[in-house]
Each structure stands twice: as C-alpha cells, then as structure tokens.
Length: 273
Image (tube, rainbow, N blue to C red; front, side):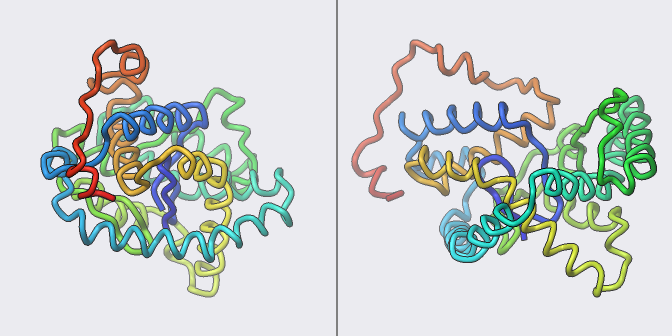
C-alpha cells in the first residue's frame, strides 16, 4: 500500500524527503492551484495525464480507503508507540531497502555515492543492529534516495503517462519498473509470507503515521487534491532526478515573479470541479 500526501507517493518502499522541502513544495503547489491550477485539456496534455478520468477514480478509491482505515490506524499507532520506537522502525525499513539505492547509484555512474551507500548499509546493518539505529549518518554517510525511475530519467527517458495505481498511488510509465526492482533487491522479499506480511503491514502503518502532518497540510491547501498530488509527485520526481537542482523555475523565483497569472474561465473550472 503506497500513501501519497503530495509529498511522497502511497507504498511499501517510502520515498524520502526532508520536511522543509516537503513544506516548500506544498506551499508552491498550493499557490499554483489557487492561481489557476484548474485543468483544461491542454493542462492534461502538459501533465502527461490523458488517463485523468480513470486516474481520478482510482485516486478517490485510494483516498477513501486511506481516510476511513489507514488514517485512524496510523493515529492509533502514533498514540500507542513512542516516537523513538517509530524512528527505529523507519530506520530499519529504510536500511533493508537500501540495496536498491546502491544499485541505482552504480547504474548512474555515481560511484562515490555507491561506495558511501554501501558503507552506510554495512554500518547500520551491524553497528546499528539491523538498521534499528543510524550511526552511519553521524559518521558522514547520510541517507540518499535513488531508484530505477531516477536512473531512467538520468539516461534521458521522458516520464511518460501519469498513472494512479490501486493501493500504490501516483506513478508514471518511467517509474513503474522501480516497483519490481525495489522488490527484487529487498531481502525481505525472499522470506516466508509469515514474516513478510506482518512486516509489510507494520511498514505501511509506520509510513502512514510519518505522513500525517503532511497530509493535513495538503488537505488545507489544495482546491483540487487530485491535481495537487499529481503535480507534487511530478515536481518531486524532477527534483530527485536532478539531485535537487532541476532546470525548471525554482520555488523562490515563482514566488517572487511579478507576472500576473491568467485567470481560469468558468468553463475550465467546471471541467475539474
């Protein structure tokens, strides 16, 4: 199950973003929605979302399941589980999925990153007791985020069509193969179902708990949550592919721009809402 709040998709393997970057993205995207983010057919084309109608149906299904089941469960988990324990659970799942990061560093010829990632994985797996603790960061081996979708982007592949998957959430044609590669490189995949199923449930609930604050911001900021989530997903993927320096207009430039936005006409508003 992959939860997406406009910061990080709905999934078994969480995509990592610092809260400051999350908040800035949410603010910028909220302004975009307020200043004319209502979709027309041209916007759908620019957003690589020709399947918007079925995507919205799947999004609504995911959102309903999230609000009625996973959010209450996540809130109960937060209430019952001390923060240090939740942090250790997050660290452990990040660590066990880190082979995918290392492999994609190699595929992108980021050999320094691959070496640092290997060191991080070994240190946290041993000294950090299976990743429950994160001594690697204090040793100068910080957490990074690479996946097969980013690798394809580095190789010049376009993002392809935007698609919302049941249970999993936002994705694109370019990012879909990472679902399989991340699973193949995760050691938990090869354990028995009696182990992987309970761990998968714990990972999902823990990840959803980590995103409660961000989804509250999304719900307050977005006129159209579907568009908000789609553009947040696409912006974040671009941010990751370009290692934090995308060629598109920065948030600060956007906020400081003196250009007046074009007002959406009534007919375009009705098409979305």
